[in-house]
Length: 280
Length: 269
Image 1: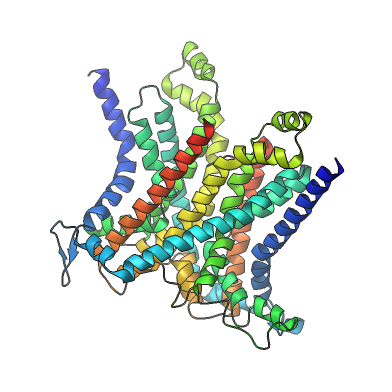
Image 2 (image 1 turned 90 degrees about the vertical axis):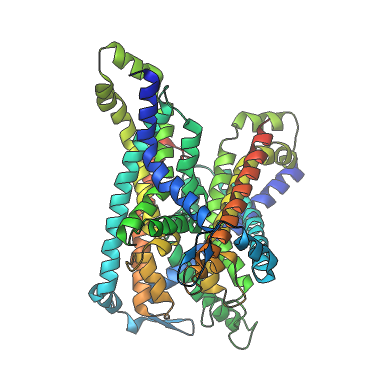
């Protein structure tokens, strides 16, 4: 047996499981998106009907664009809030720094559904937010405005996905050689110039990575909009999920998920390009 | 000079305040829910006389919760063991000089972690329906395995790349076989990375909700049970369950942090 054959055999043996459990499932749902749902059975004729329906129907295309906008908002707010926090932790020394980092990371491990539950009870009619506003006299009676709308989805997603943004930014800051900062100060640059010309550019790859995490996680999330979004917080994830439940149109759901897949891949590739350009 | 340091101090104070506020938002809801599982709170006052552990007792006698807990444990343990094994094999393979399709293989491994979980869950759902496989714990295990594989693989790979090549060369020069080199030279070095990966994977599997929703069928894992309970309303029992889940998560987080601390850095993903 030639060594070439042996190498192929080993490759097939090693790649078999990832292929069967990752590549085939993705391929099979992509294929399903080209079929159509008939009465009680799937009509296996290849066509782009589902995609045409999706973009021709404003209910779906509009929800998709709305979701993209929402996820971009989640991303921007998370970075604007997360960057200063990562920077602050980075500025600290010794055990205080480690403790703050731990506090920033622990929420990553907290159950997603639990965070959703606790935030929902905070924002609700009898929640802490209302209680506090009542106590300071800002409102006379508990308000519903904090829950079951698009804003509630935005707030909740930012809180849930913020730790995913803080960590990569902190790691990027951590990797900046101290000598560069000293050199900058020695050459007479002020704190602001050092930040703008050295710290910010060098931490950009981590920031882009964190932003991407927030974007992709928000994009596919269908439980947050369902739990805190009410009727106005409709996202594409919720629409997809309903196709596999009540609506029971699997091929159409698969087509929407395929669009979601392409969107997140585009995001990943764009972020990758931005990071590699940064390194040149 | 004074201007600069004044600007620096202002930056520290503002970002510090922001950090404090955000940590409050991250932790206060959680703490309140934990408190709610023990006492009643009305009009912002804690009614200490209502202090009781009853919700925990009812929780323990609730068969659906206990079932969900054992399902979660089975899924987590089985999928983490499979993923760790696969991670070692795949990392050894992609680092081997005779490896083929290295880049493609790595992208495949990372995909389920990078893509929105809804896509991964749906893909597995469609695939299992196509081959007529009934949804249940096995499909959940498959979903969790491919989801946590990326993390386990990344940690083993990073450790493997950090090892000097001379280690393996020396082992071969001294007449050790491939198997002996793996067993006595590589494995002892990889063991701690595998363990760290396993604990991380365990926490991920423990919390995984979005993939499970699609592939669980009529089986319930703990997050799915909690989600189902949440839709009904707020009860002390839910808060008790929330507290139990949180304590497990925080315990696992501390284990991970402790395992990663000695090297002074957190491995990147």
